[in-house]
Length: 288
Image (cartoon, rainbow, N blue to C red; front, side, top):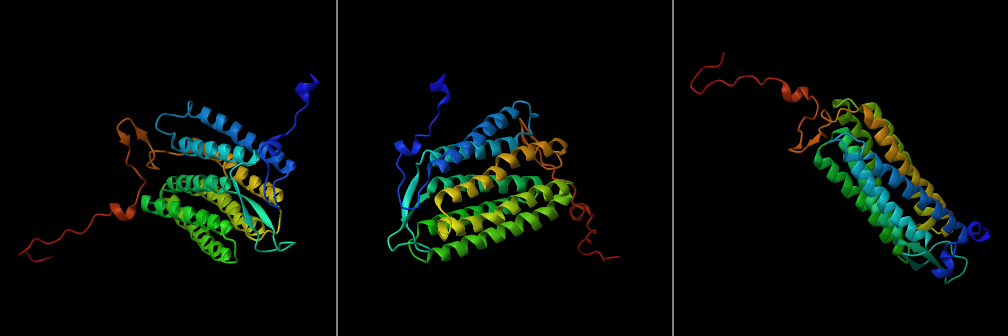
C-alpha cells in the first residue's frame, strides 16, 4: 500500500532540463495537473458528441481538436520535452545566461487560437472571408511571438510588436465586427459574453509573454503557472460554456444546420437583401 500511495514526479530526472532558467519539479507538478484537466475535459467533451443532436456538432468537433492538442502539448511540457535553450537578452544576472523555451506551447496556441476564432465566427454569422481573416491574424500573432522567443537579440521586440498588432486587429474583429453580425441572427447576448471572455484572456497573453519568453522578468515555472491558468480558462472552460449556451441556439438561423445532404443555407434575415428593387423601364418605353 505504501508503494501505491508514494508518488514521485521523475520527469525531470528522466528528461533533464536545460538552461540556467529552467522548469522546476513544482512547475512540472503544476503542468501535470493542467495536463489532467485537459485530458479529462477532452474525454468528457468528446462524450457529449454522442448526445448532441444530429447536424449540430460543429462546436463539439472544433473544441475536441483544441482539447486533444492541448493535452498533447501540456503532456510534452510537463515531461520536460519539446524545448530549446535560448540565450537571454534582457534582465540576465550574468553575461552568459540562457532560458528554456518550450515550443510545444506555441503548437498548442497555433491550433487553439484559430479554433476559438472559428467558433466565434460561426456563432456570430460573419462571412467566411472574415473567419479566414481572423484565423490568419491568430496565426500571425502566435508565429510572431514564436520567432521573437527564438531571437537572441533585442530585435525580438520587433516580432513582439508585429504579433501584438495582429492580436489588436483580431480583438477588434471578434468584438465589434462579430457583435454587429450576431444581432442579425439573434445571439448578440451570448456572443458578447463569449467574445468578451475570450478577449479578456487574450489581453493577458501579450503581458505574460513579455514577462517570460520575451523579457525574462519571471522564471520558467512562474511563466507556465501564468500560461497554464490562461489556457485552462480559454479552452476547457470556454468549450463547456459554448455547449451549455448552445442549447438555446437555432442552428438553422445560424446557417450551421448540417444534414446528410450538406449544409442548410439559411443565415438569418437581412432586410437590405429582401427589399423589392424598383422595376427597371423596358428599353424604348418611357419611365412613369
